[in-house]
Amino acid sequence: MRLLFDENLSRKLVAHLGDLYPGSLHVAAAGLLESPDAAVWDYAKAKGFAIVSADSDFFEIATTLGPPPKVIWLRRWTYRTRDVEALLRREAIRIAEFTGDPELGLLVLDKE
Image 1 (tube, rainbow, N blue to C red):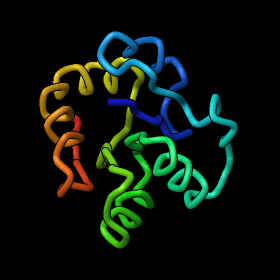
Image 2: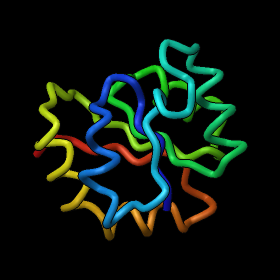
Image 3: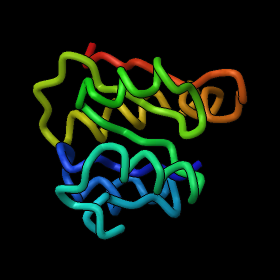
Image 4: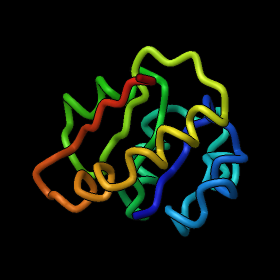
């Protein structure tokens, strides 16, 4: 599964998590830095990415439009990059099951 990290998350996550999520990108690498959420949504949908964001806007879009793309929302997050990395590693099986289920469009993860 490929993840598209929103601009509110570190670009370093792509390299740090490359072993678990190969082919993932940060929005900056996709030329989408400071783009409207709709542009990020359309890109992820067209390219087969799941969006990872701490932004509640993607939660709202996902609940309104449904998949694709899928959204992994880091709810109530005051994040440090290493905490995001640890969470996404810890939840790798759950994320794989989520991305593999065509009926599911939103996965909400909390820090704890």
